[in-house]
Amino acid sequence: MRHTAAIALIMSLPFTAAIADVYRSVDAQGQVHYSDTPTPGAELVHVQKLGMQNSAPSAASDAKALAKSDAQIHTELAQQSAQRAVQQDVEQTRADQCKKATADYDQSVQARRIYKPGADGEREYMSDADADQTRLNLRLAMQTACGSSQ
Image (cartoon, rainbow, N blue to C red; front, top):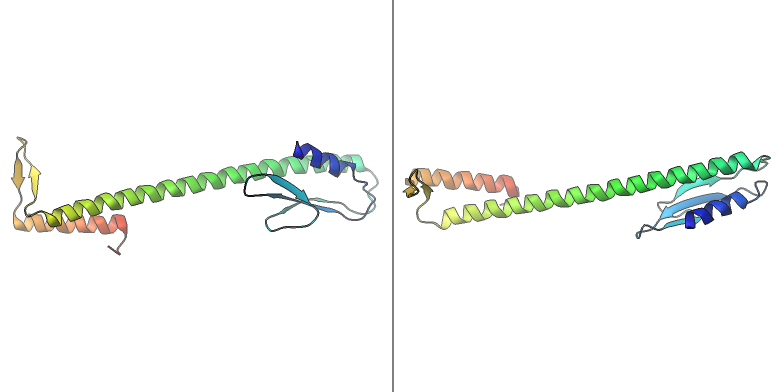
């Protein structure tokens, strides 16, 4: 409804009047606002020039420009939202991987003996050298998952 009112307002302005720029902005709630004064992030959507004789073609092209910029704005907002969602998902996955790698390493350090399951399902305890190598591998995995600050 606001789009239609804004287009009607722009089309009804006399084209022989003074120069009038129209700026379009979208607030944090996604509402579209039109103004004659620029604000941060506003997009210039209409420039009226002095001495325009035929207003019909200009009004039609202005309406197309408004519709096109609306579609572009919605596409850009959708892309930004998708990028934020992907970034949050990646950060969450990295945090989960770090948490698991840290827990695995901590468990290996706290255990007196490390084992692996045997073919028959029983525990096969590792030698001290193999256990130390496993702990080292788990520490490197933790540093990779969490960053080298761990």
